[in-house]
Image (cartoon, rainbow, N blue to C red; front, side):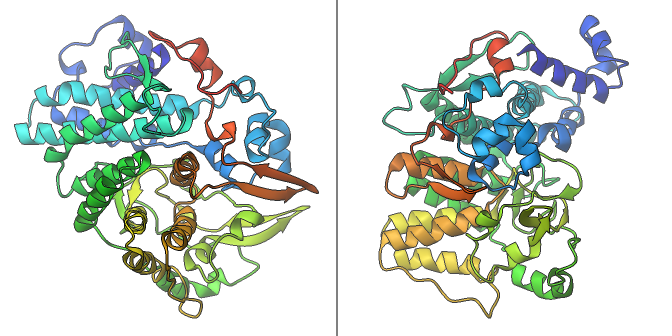
Length: 468
Protein backbone atom coordinates (compact mmCIF):
# COMPACT_ATOMS: atom_id res chain seq x y z
CA UNK A 1 0.00 0.00 0.00
CA UNK A 2 3.03 2.26 -0.09
CA UNK A 3 1.84 4.08 -3.17
CA UNK A 4 -1.43 4.96 -1.41
CA UNK A 5 0.36 6.63 1.47
CA UNK A 6 2.80 8.32 -0.84
CA UNK A 7 -0.26 9.89 -2.48
CA UNK A 8 -1.55 11.37 0.72
CA UNK A 9 1.88 12.56 1.85
CA UNK A 10 2.37 14.24 -1.53
CA UNK A 11 -1.02 15.90 -1.11
CA UNK A 12 -0.03 17.10 2.33
CA UNK A 13 3.23 18.41 0.89
CA UNK A 14 1.35 20.40 -1.71
CA UNK A 15 -0.93 21.82 0.95
CA UNK A 16 1.90 23.17 3.06
CA UNK A 17 3.94 24.40 0.11
CA UNK A 18 6.84 21.97 -0.01
CA UNK A 19 8.87 21.86 -3.19
CA UNK A 20 8.39 18.18 -4.02
CA UNK A 21 7.10 14.89 -2.68
CA UNK A 22 10.55 13.30 -2.78
CA UNK A 23 11.99 16.14 -0.71
CA UNK A 24 9.17 15.73 1.78
CA UNK A 25 9.82 12.01 2.19
CA UNK A 26 13.54 12.59 2.64
CA UNK A 27 13.18 15.38 5.20
CA UNK A 28 10.50 15.12 7.86
CA UNK A 29 8.83 18.55 7.94
CA UNK A 30 9.00 20.62 11.08
CA UNK A 31 7.29 23.70 12.44
CA UNK A 32 5.27 25.53 9.85
CA UNK A 33 5.64 22.70 7.35
CA UNK A 34 3.53 20.38 9.49
CA UNK A 35 -0.25 20.82 9.59
CA UNK A 36 -1.14 21.88 13.11
CA UNK A 37 -4.38 23.82 13.07
CA UNK A 38 -7.87 22.49 12.58
CA UNK A 39 -8.07 24.47 9.34
CA UNK A 40 -4.98 22.64 8.04
CA UNK A 41 -6.69 19.28 8.38
CA UNK A 42 -10.14 20.49 7.43
CA UNK A 43 -8.69 21.54 4.07
CA UNK A 44 -8.31 17.88 3.16
CA UNK A 45 -12.09 17.41 3.31
CA UNK A 46 -12.45 20.26 0.82
CA UNK A 47 -10.22 18.43 -1.66
CA UNK A 48 -13.23 17.25 -3.65
CA UNK A 49 -11.30 15.89 -6.62
CA UNK A 50 -8.86 13.83 -4.57
CA UNK A 51 -11.02 12.66 -1.69
CA UNK A 52 -14.59 12.59 -3.00
CA UNK A 53 -14.35 10.51 -6.16
CA UNK A 54 -16.42 7.34 -6.32
CA UNK A 55 -15.48 5.47 -9.48
CA UNK A 56 -17.72 2.45 -9.99
CA UNK A 57 -17.60 2.25 -13.79
CA UNK A 58 -17.33 -1.55 -13.93
CA UNK A 59 -20.47 -1.90 -11.81
CA UNK A 60 -22.25 0.48 -14.21
CA UNK A 61 -20.98 -1.64 -17.11
CA UNK A 62 -22.37 -4.80 -15.56
CA UNK A 63 -25.76 -3.19 -15.00
CA UNK A 64 -25.62 -1.71 -18.53
CA UNK A 65 -26.44 1.62 -16.88
CA UNK A 66 -24.05 3.37 -19.25
CA UNK A 67 -23.66 2.99 -22.99
CA UNK A 68 -20.36 1.67 -24.32
CA UNK A 69 -19.60 2.02 -28.01
CA UNK A 70 -18.41 -0.90 -30.12
CA UNK A 71 -15.09 0.84 -30.64
CA UNK A 72 -14.53 1.06 -26.89
CA UNK A 73 -15.45 -2.58 -26.43
CA UNK A 74 -12.95 -3.55 -29.09
CA UNK A 75 -9.96 -2.17 -27.17
CA UNK A 76 -11.16 -2.49 -23.56
CA UNK A 77 -11.57 -6.20 -22.79
CA UNK A 78 -12.57 -5.69 -19.14
CA UNK A 79 -15.36 -3.29 -20.16
CA UNK A 80 -16.46 -5.85 -22.75
CA UNK A 81 -16.47 -8.76 -20.28
CA UNK A 82 -18.78 -6.93 -17.88
CA UNK A 83 -20.94 -5.15 -20.48
CA UNK A 84 -21.63 -8.35 -22.43
CA UNK A 85 -21.82 -10.56 -19.32
CA UNK A 86 -19.05 -12.91 -20.46
CA UNK A 87 -18.76 -15.53 -17.73
CA UNK A 88 -15.87 -17.21 -19.52
CA UNK A 89 -13.66 -14.11 -19.38
CA UNK A 90 -10.78 -14.07 -16.92
CA UNK A 91 -11.43 -10.65 -15.47
CA UNK A 92 -8.52 -11.05 -13.05
CA UNK A 93 -6.12 -11.25 -15.96
CA UNK A 94 -7.92 -8.42 -17.72
CA UNK A 95 -7.90 -6.14 -14.65
CA UNK A 96 -4.32 -4.90 -14.93
CA UNK A 97 -5.09 -1.25 -15.54
CA UNK A 98 -8.58 -0.57 -14.14
CA UNK A 99 -7.26 0.47 -10.74
CA UNK A 100 -8.82 3.84 -9.98
CA UNK A 101 -11.76 2.41 -8.00
CA UNK A 102 -9.32 0.72 -5.63
CA UNK A 103 -6.57 3.30 -5.32
CA UNK A 104 -8.77 6.40 -5.28
CA UNK A 105 -10.80 4.87 -2.47
CA UNK A 106 -7.77 3.96 -0.39
CA UNK A 107 -6.17 7.33 -1.04
CA UNK A 108 -9.24 9.02 0.41
CA UNK A 109 -9.26 6.57 3.33
CA UNK A 110 -5.64 7.53 4.00
CA UNK A 111 -6.71 11.16 4.18
CA UNK A 112 -9.54 10.41 6.57
CA UNK A 113 -7.22 8.29 8.73
CA UNK A 114 -4.86 11.25 8.91
CA UNK A 115 -7.66 13.54 10.06
CA UNK A 116 -8.98 11.04 12.60
CA UNK A 117 -5.49 10.60 14.08
CA UNK A 118 -4.85 14.33 14.43
CA UNK A 119 -8.12 16.26 14.63
CA UNK A 120 -8.47 16.00 18.40
CA UNK A 121 -5.01 17.54 18.99
CA UNK A 122 -5.18 20.36 16.46
CA UNK A 123 -4.63 23.97 17.47
CA UNK A 124 -6.78 27.06 16.99
CA UNK A 125 -10.00 25.15 17.64
CA UNK A 126 -12.33 24.31 20.48
CA UNK A 127 -12.87 20.72 21.57
CA UNK A 128 -16.30 20.83 19.95
CA UNK A 129 -14.85 21.94 16.61
CA UNK A 130 -12.23 19.21 16.81
CA UNK A 131 -14.89 16.58 17.44
CA UNK A 132 -16.95 17.75 14.47
CA UNK A 133 -14.07 17.29 12.01
CA UNK A 134 -13.10 13.98 13.63
CA UNK A 135 -16.65 12.67 13.30
CA UNK A 136 -16.98 13.83 9.69
CA UNK A 137 -13.80 11.98 8.75
CA UNK A 138 -15.19 8.84 10.37
CA UNK A 139 -18.37 9.06 8.29
CA UNK A 140 -16.42 9.59 5.08
CA UNK A 141 -14.10 6.69 5.89
CA UNK A 142 -17.08 4.41 6.53
CA UNK A 143 -18.69 5.50 3.26
CA UNK A 144 -15.49 4.74 1.36
CA UNK A 145 -15.20 1.28 2.93
CA UNK A 146 -18.85 0.61 2.08
CA UNK A 147 -18.09 1.26 -1.58
CA UNK A 148 -15.03 -0.99 -1.51
CA UNK A 149 -16.65 -3.94 0.27
CA UNK A 150 -19.69 -3.80 -2.00
CA UNK A 151 -17.51 -3.73 -5.10
CA UNK A 152 -14.70 -6.19 -4.43
CA UNK A 153 -16.36 -8.62 -1.98
CA UNK A 154 -19.53 -10.68 -1.98
CA UNK A 155 -22.62 -9.02 -0.62
CA UNK A 156 -23.40 -9.19 3.09
CA UNK A 157 -25.21 -12.30 4.31
CA UNK A 158 -25.45 -12.81 8.05
CA UNK A 159 -25.14 -16.57 7.63
CA UNK A 160 -21.68 -16.45 6.06
CA UNK A 161 -20.31 -12.92 6.52
CA UNK A 162 -17.84 -14.12 9.15
CA UNK A 163 -16.44 -16.75 6.78
CA UNK A 164 -15.87 -14.65 3.64
CA UNK A 165 -13.10 -12.13 3.08
CA UNK A 166 -13.82 -8.49 2.30
CA UNK A 167 -11.12 -5.88 1.60
CA UNK A 168 -7.98 -4.67 3.42
CA UNK A 169 -8.78 -2.68 6.54
CA UNK A 170 -6.36 0.16 7.23
CA UNK A 171 -6.92 2.51 10.13
CA UNK A 172 -3.60 4.39 10.19
CA UNK A 173 -2.10 7.02 7.93
CA UNK A 174 1.39 5.71 8.70
CA UNK A 175 3.19 4.80 5.48
CA UNK A 176 4.17 1.45 6.98
CA UNK A 177 0.79 0.68 8.51
CA UNK A 178 -0.15 -2.98 8.32
CA UNK A 179 -3.32 -4.06 6.58
CA UNK A 180 -5.50 -7.08 7.12
CA UNK A 181 -8.08 -8.39 4.69
CA UNK A 182 -10.82 -8.80 7.27
CA UNK A 183 -14.04 -10.74 6.96
CA UNK A 184 -17.17 -9.13 5.58
CA UNK A 185 -18.68 -9.23 9.07
CA UNK A 186 -15.65 -7.51 10.57
CA UNK A 187 -15.81 -4.78 7.94
CA UNK A 188 -19.50 -4.11 8.57
CA UNK A 189 -18.90 -4.11 12.32
CA UNK A 190 -16.10 -1.58 11.75
CA UNK A 191 -18.34 0.72 9.71
CA UNK A 192 -21.11 0.51 12.30
CA UNK A 193 -18.61 1.32 15.05
CA UNK A 194 -17.31 4.36 13.14
CA UNK A 195 -20.86 5.61 12.72
CA UNK A 196 -21.80 5.01 16.35
CA UNK A 197 -18.78 7.03 17.47
CA UNK A 198 -19.33 9.81 14.93
CA UNK A 199 -23.06 10.38 15.23
CA UNK A 200 -23.15 12.33 18.53
CA UNK A 201 -20.77 14.99 17.16
CA UNK A 202 -22.14 15.54 13.64
CA UNK A 203 -23.48 19.06 13.12
CA UNK A 204 -27.02 19.74 11.99
CA UNK A 205 -25.61 21.98 9.27
CA UNK A 206 -22.21 21.63 7.58
CA UNK A 207 -19.82 24.27 6.32
CA UNK A 208 -19.96 22.71 2.83
CA UNK A 209 -21.91 19.89 1.20
CA UNK A 210 -18.68 17.86 1.16
CA UNK A 211 -18.76 17.75 4.98
CA UNK A 212 -21.21 15.15 6.36
CA UNK A 213 -23.90 16.48 8.69
CA UNK A 214 -26.33 14.72 11.00
CA UNK A 215 -28.68 13.96 8.12
CA UNK A 216 -25.81 12.33 6.23
CA UNK A 217 -25.03 10.16 9.23
CA UNK A 218 -28.59 8.89 9.60
CA UNK A 219 -28.96 8.43 5.82
CA UNK A 220 -25.78 6.39 5.57
CA UNK A 221 -26.81 4.26 8.54
CA UNK A 222 -30.10 3.59 6.75
CA UNK A 223 -28.16 2.46 3.67
CA UNK A 224 -25.80 0.35 5.76
CA UNK A 225 -28.54 -1.42 7.72
CA UNK A 226 -30.57 -2.00 4.56
CA UNK A 227 -27.59 -3.75 2.98
CA UNK A 228 -27.33 -5.96 6.07
CA UNK A 229 -31.03 -6.80 6.00
CA UNK A 230 -31.66 -4.98 9.27
CA UNK A 231 -34.93 -3.46 8.11
CA UNK A 232 -36.15 -2.11 11.45
CA UNK A 233 -32.87 -0.23 11.98
CA UNK A 234 -32.87 0.95 8.36
CA UNK A 235 -36.39 2.33 8.74
CA UNK A 236 -35.59 4.08 12.02
CA UNK A 237 -32.55 5.80 10.55
CA UNK A 238 -34.39 6.69 7.35
CA UNK A 239 -37.02 8.45 9.43
CA UNK A 240 -34.34 10.32 11.38
CA UNK A 241 -32.61 11.36 8.15
CA UNK A 242 -35.85 12.65 6.67
CA UNK A 243 -36.41 14.71 9.81
CA UNK A 244 -33.15 16.48 8.94
CA UNK A 245 -33.90 16.88 5.22
CA UNK A 246 -36.98 15.65 3.35
CA UNK A 247 -36.76 17.88 0.28
CA UNK A 248 -37.54 16.49 -3.15
CA UNK A 249 -36.61 18.30 -6.36
CA UNK A 250 -39.55 18.93 -8.69
CA UNK A 251 -38.39 17.46 -11.98
CA UNK A 252 -41.79 18.02 -13.58
CA UNK A 253 -41.36 21.77 -13.03
CA UNK A 254 -37.82 21.58 -14.42
CA UNK A 255 -39.11 19.82 -17.53
CA UNK A 256 -41.88 22.33 -18.07
CA UNK A 257 -39.51 25.27 -17.64
CA UNK A 258 -37.10 23.81 -20.21
CA UNK A 259 -39.54 22.01 -22.50
CA UNK A 260 -38.51 23.93 -25.61
CA UNK A 261 -34.90 22.74 -25.38
CA UNK A 262 -35.77 19.25 -24.12
CA UNK A 263 -38.27 18.58 -26.91
CA UNK A 264 -36.01 19.86 -29.68
CA UNK A 265 -35.04 16.60 -31.40
CA UNK A 266 -32.10 18.25 -33.16
CA UNK A 267 -30.47 19.63 -30.02
CA UNK A 268 -28.33 17.60 -27.64
CA UNK A 269 -27.13 20.52 -25.55
CA UNK A 270 -29.31 20.89 -22.49
CA UNK A 271 -29.41 23.10 -19.45
CA UNK A 272 -26.98 23.01 -16.50
CA UNK A 273 -27.41 20.05 -14.17
CA UNK A 274 -29.51 20.77 -11.08
CA UNK A 275 -27.82 17.81 -9.35
CA UNK A 276 -24.73 19.68 -8.25
CA UNK A 277 -23.56 21.05 -4.92
CA UNK A 278 -26.78 22.91 -4.13
CA UNK A 279 -29.22 20.16 -5.14
CA UNK A 280 -32.00 20.26 -2.53
CA UNK A 281 -31.94 16.47 -2.21
CA UNK A 282 -28.29 16.34 -1.10
CA UNK A 283 -27.28 15.14 2.32
CA UNK A 284 -23.68 15.22 1.16
CA UNK A 285 -21.96 15.42 -2.22
CA UNK A 286 -19.34 13.14 -3.74
CA UNK A 287 -18.31 12.94 -7.38
CA UNK A 288 -18.53 9.89 -9.59
CA UNK A 289 -15.66 8.69 -11.79
CA UNK A 290 -15.50 12.09 -13.46
CA UNK A 291 -14.91 15.03 -11.16
CA UNK A 292 -15.04 17.96 -13.50
CA UNK A 293 -17.74 19.92 -15.30
CA UNK A 294 -18.91 17.48 -17.91
CA UNK A 295 -21.97 15.65 -19.19
CA UNK A 296 -23.38 12.43 -17.83
CA UNK A 297 -22.82 9.00 -19.31
CA UNK A 298 -24.94 8.05 -22.28
CA UNK A 299 -27.22 5.06 -21.70
CA UNK A 300 -28.22 2.11 -23.93
CA UNK A 301 -31.62 1.95 -25.60
CA UNK A 302 -32.59 -1.24 -23.76
CA UNK A 303 -31.76 0.44 -20.43
CA UNK A 304 -33.77 3.55 -21.29
CA UNK A 305 -36.81 1.35 -21.91
CA UNK A 306 -36.98 0.51 -18.19
CA UNK A 307 -37.91 4.09 -17.24
CA UNK A 308 -41.53 4.87 -16.53
CA UNK A 309 -43.50 6.68 -19.23
CA UNK A 310 -43.53 10.42 -18.61
CA UNK A 311 -40.51 10.36 -16.30
CA UNK A 312 -39.45 14.02 -16.43
CA UNK A 313 -36.14 13.26 -14.76
CA UNK A 314 -35.24 10.84 -17.55
CA UNK A 315 -36.61 13.06 -20.33
CA UNK A 316 -34.63 16.03 -19.01
CA UNK A 317 -31.34 14.13 -18.97
CA UNK A 318 -31.20 11.91 -22.08
CA UNK A 319 -32.34 12.06 -25.69
CA UNK A 320 -32.23 9.31 -28.30
CA UNK A 321 -29.51 9.72 -30.91
CA UNK A 322 -27.95 7.75 -33.75
CA UNK A 323 -24.28 8.14 -34.62
CA UNK A 324 -23.15 5.94 -37.49
CA UNK A 325 -24.52 2.47 -36.90
CA UNK A 326 -25.13 2.94 -33.19
CA UNK A 327 -28.24 4.28 -31.47
CA UNK A 328 -28.21 5.28 -27.80
CA UNK A 329 -29.61 7.88 -25.41
CA UNK A 330 -27.35 10.89 -25.41
CA UNK A 331 -26.76 12.76 -22.13
CA UNK A 332 -27.77 16.40 -22.43
CA UNK A 333 -27.16 18.04 -19.05
CA UNK A 334 -23.80 19.56 -18.16
CA UNK A 335 -22.30 20.40 -14.82
CA UNK A 336 -21.89 18.47 -11.58
CA UNK A 337 -23.69 15.27 -10.55
CA UNK A 338 -23.92 13.76 -7.07
CA UNK A 339 -23.09 10.16 -7.93
CA UNK A 340 -21.15 9.26 -4.78
CA UNK A 341 -22.95 10.98 -1.93
CA UNK A 342 -26.40 10.42 -0.45
CA UNK A 343 -29.68 12.08 -1.42
CA UNK A 344 -33.13 12.21 0.07
CA UNK A 345 -34.75 10.18 -2.71
CA UNK A 346 -32.63 7.16 -1.76
CA UNK A 347 -33.78 7.50 1.84
CA UNK A 348 -37.45 7.82 0.83
CA UNK A 349 -37.13 4.59 -1.14
CA UNK A 350 -35.30 2.82 1.70
CA UNK A 351 -38.22 3.78 3.91
CA UNK A 352 -40.71 2.52 1.33
CA UNK A 353 -38.97 -0.88 1.09
CA UNK A 354 -38.81 -1.28 4.85
CA UNK A 355 -42.52 -0.46 5.17
CA UNK A 356 -43.37 -2.95 2.41
CA UNK A 357 -41.42 -5.67 4.19
CA UNK A 358 -43.37 -4.87 7.36
CA UNK A 359 -46.69 -5.52 5.56
CA UNK A 360 -47.44 -1.80 5.44
CA UNK A 361 -48.04 -1.82 1.71
CA UNK A 362 -50.32 1.19 1.63
CA UNK A 363 -47.82 3.33 3.55
CA UNK A 364 -45.00 2.08 1.34
CA UNK A 365 -46.86 3.05 -1.81
CA UNK A 366 -47.71 6.46 -0.33
CA UNK A 367 -43.97 7.12 0.08
CA UNK A 368 -43.26 5.83 -3.42
CA UNK A 369 -45.98 8.01 -4.94
CA UNK A 370 -44.70 11.02 -3.02
CA UNK A 371 -41.44 10.60 -4.94
CA UNK A 372 -43.16 9.87 -8.25
CA UNK A 373 -45.29 13.02 -8.06
CA UNK A 374 -42.10 15.06 -8.42
CA UNK A 375 -40.90 12.92 -11.34
CA UNK A 376 -43.78 11.82 -13.55
CA UNK A 377 -45.40 14.45 -15.77
CA UNK A 378 -49.04 15.17 -14.82
CA UNK A 379 -50.44 13.82 -18.08
CA UNK A 380 -48.73 10.45 -17.43
CA UNK A 381 -49.07 10.22 -13.67
CA UNK A 382 -51.24 7.57 -12.05
CA UNK A 383 -50.93 6.55 -8.43
CA UNK A 384 -49.49 3.08 -7.97
CA UNK A 385 -51.12 0.68 -5.55
CA UNK A 386 -50.19 -2.71 -4.14
CA UNK A 387 -52.20 -5.44 -2.47
CA UNK A 388 -49.22 -7.48 -1.28
CA UNK A 389 -45.53 -7.19 -0.53
CA UNK A 390 -44.40 -8.52 -3.91
CA UNK A 391 -46.32 -5.87 -5.84
CA UNK A 392 -45.01 -3.10 -3.62
CA UNK A 393 -41.43 -4.36 -3.84
CA UNK A 394 -41.56 -4.62 -7.64
CA UNK A 395 -42.61 -0.98 -7.95
CA UNK A 396 -40.11 0.25 -5.36
CA UNK A 397 -37.17 -1.67 -6.86
CA UNK A 398 -37.94 -0.42 -10.37
CA UNK A 399 -38.18 3.19 -9.25
CA UNK A 400 -35.04 3.01 -7.13
CA UNK A 401 -32.92 1.51 -9.90
CA UNK A 402 -34.00 4.36 -12.17
CA UNK A 403 -33.64 7.10 -9.57
CA UNK A 404 -30.14 6.04 -8.52
CA UNK A 405 -28.85 5.15 -12.00
CA UNK A 406 -25.11 5.80 -12.50
CA UNK A 407 -24.43 5.33 -8.77
CA UNK A 408 -23.31 2.23 -6.89
CA UNK A 409 -26.68 1.85 -5.14
CA UNK A 410 -28.53 -0.22 -7.81
CA UNK A 411 -25.54 -2.59 -7.95
CA UNK A 412 -25.61 -2.99 -4.15
CA UNK A 413 -29.36 -3.49 -4.15
CA UNK A 414 -29.24 -6.11 -6.90
CA UNK A 415 -26.57 -8.10 -5.07
CA UNK A 416 -28.51 -7.89 -1.79
CA UNK A 417 -31.79 -8.94 -3.40
CA UNK A 418 -30.14 -11.76 -5.33
CA UNK A 419 -28.56 -13.14 -2.16
CA UNK A 420 -31.93 -12.97 -0.40
CA UNK A 421 -33.45 -14.94 -3.27
CA UNK A 422 -37.00 -13.55 -3.19
CA UNK A 423 -36.84 -10.53 -5.52
CA UNK A 424 -33.91 -11.53 -7.70
CA UNK A 425 -32.53 -9.33 -10.44
CA UNK A 426 -31.08 -10.54 -13.71
CA UNK A 427 -30.94 -9.15 -17.22
CA UNK A 428 -31.10 -10.21 -20.85
CA UNK A 429 -30.57 -8.28 -24.07
CA UNK A 430 -30.06 -8.57 -27.80
CA UNK A 431 -26.75 -7.19 -29.03
CA UNK A 432 -25.59 -7.44 -32.66
CA UNK A 433 -27.91 -10.36 -33.32
CA UNK A 434 -26.91 -12.35 -30.24
CA UNK A 435 -28.71 -12.87 -26.95
CA UNK A 436 -26.82 -12.16 -23.73
CA UNK A 437 -27.94 -12.71 -20.15
CA UNK A 438 -26.80 -12.04 -16.60
CA UNK A 439 -28.08 -14.49 -14.00
CA UNK A 440 -28.78 -13.45 -10.40
CA UNK A 441 -26.21 -15.98 -9.14
CA UNK A 442 -23.46 -15.07 -11.62
CA UNK A 443 -19.93 -14.64 -10.26
CA UNK A 444 -19.78 -11.43 -12.28
CA UNK A 445 -21.62 -9.60 -9.48
CA UNK A 446 -18.33 -9.41 -7.52
CA UNK A 447 -15.47 -7.44 -9.08
CA UNK A 448 -11.87 -8.72 -8.94
CA UNK A 449 -9.17 -6.72 -7.21
CA UNK A 450 -6.80 -5.01 -9.68
CA UNK A 451 -3.79 -7.22 -10.26
CA UNK A 452 -1.43 -4.45 -9.22
CA UNK A 453 -2.95 -4.43 -5.73
CA UNK A 454 -2.67 -8.19 -5.38
CA UNK A 455 0.93 -8.21 -6.62
CA UNK A 456 1.92 -5.28 -4.37
CA UNK A 457 -0.33 -5.32 -1.27
CA UNK A 458 2.01 -3.28 0.88
CA UNK A 459 2.31 -4.40 4.50
CA UNK A 460 -0.33 -7.10 4.21
CA UNK A 461 -1.81 -9.67 1.86
CA UNK A 462 -4.76 -9.69 -0.55
CA UNK A 463 -6.67 -12.76 -1.65
CA UNK A 464 -8.95 -12.51 -4.66
CA UNK A 465 -12.64 -12.90 -3.81
CA UNK A 466 -13.53 -14.33 -7.23
CA UNK A 467 -11.97 -17.02 -9.42
CA UNK A 468 -12.20 -14.95 -12.59
